[in-house]
Image 1 (cartoon, rainbow over the protein chains, first blue to last red):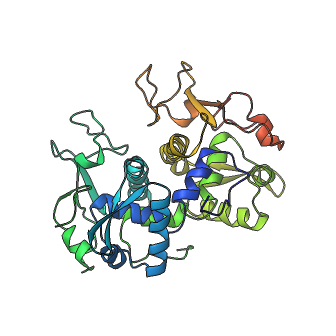
Image 2: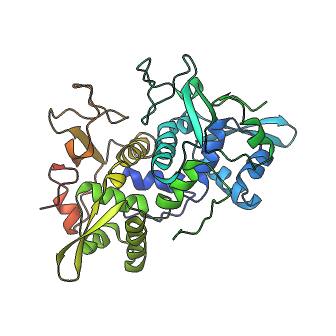
Length: 170
Length: 170
């Protein structure tokens, strides 16, 4: 095991899951990968995260099979969610929805809709119009009324337009 | 805000949510409260967590409105999930299911079924027989084939029998 087994006397699968995704910043990195961010420098600028921390978290995600590196130039890699990583979409989405409901005033920071019909997803990620729970590649996101207009990094600017999850930012 | 705003430049609701439930041990404490644990000493024995850490995490959960203290004797409180806390059930359940699928060999550590009909819940927490997504109070849990028979604390022993979520341990 590459990770410290901090919860090793906890046999629960939740403890195992938290060993992989429970470190500081990890779920925010996974969120950005869902949003279509793929480059180290973009992740760093968008997350305001120390380079060494981002590097360590990405290495863990790769080691644990949630993310794969895809070379796009000599010595440079894109970071892309694997199927195992993409299966975290319900967790990321529902934790975000819980935060929107209880911790954010004035409306959603980010909206998610079913790309096929444009209907906003409900709290558990289902499309109320179609009755399906779309996979993340079939979800479109756009800023909500509480989105901050202040950030000027490339990712924040790209995500002001509607964008389909997992599609690379333009 | 009682918490350090470590993600303060992240406007996303996920960052807000992680400020509340993203600290080490917090989701495992919330899991135990879903399982019916209510006493400080039982949480401490079941989680193998330092007393000061457990006390700090519970204080945060109370401050943030996820848990309420209910006195049961002079100077002694039960800890009970509020509605805001109970709304974390899909997150806790799905992260546990993700861990079961990808990180545990040999079958589930813990099983969850719809109490009304006895059918095991699917990966997103829905009852395949009834088509409903039961609230946690309508979910029954029991150990799965990968559960450890080694732990002898009172909570681990009580949870070897089928038990309905949120019902105090006998």
